[in-house]
Amino acid sequence: MKKTDYFNDQLESEAVIVAPEQGEKLELETISITFKVTSEISNDQLGIYEITLPPMAIGAKLHYHRFMDETFIVNEGVLTMQVGDKEMQAHPGTVAYIPRFTPHGFKNDTNETVKLSLVFNPSQKREGFFRGLYETLNEVPINPKKYLKLYNKYDSFPVDTSDMLPIRE
Image 1 (spheres, rainbow, N blue to C red):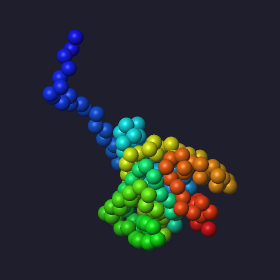
Image 2: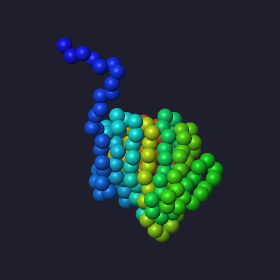
Image 3: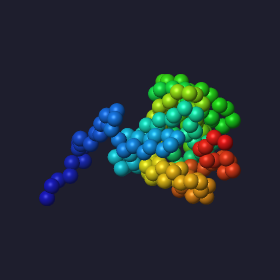
């Protein structure tokens, strides 16, 4: 019988390195999402996703999360962020930490592409949300009830359900 060592750490080699062009990619008409660190990799503790917004695209309208925090890291372009009732321009290098219960939204109001990293902590199996978003936003017309059901299942709550779809009117 092997004796348990209560005094020394057991080191592991479980690191995951994701190169710039690696990761599962979902292409929507208005947004591109690449999975970098997934819920499966991090035991649901962390999710890191690369988002590309083409010119004039909406990432998400004003919403909040109950069980996860979200961090935005702007890598390229100028991202328009709404936090509560304030709107601001986030330039490359900007890091915006959005704790749970903080209403927020984001979009690209420019004629240039915006690239950012989104970090969710914990991840709450966010990949399911993005896959469902891919399915829902590719339907014509978009079904608002299905969209809201997806949002709520993955810890996202629109501030105004009458203006929640990420489309420009």
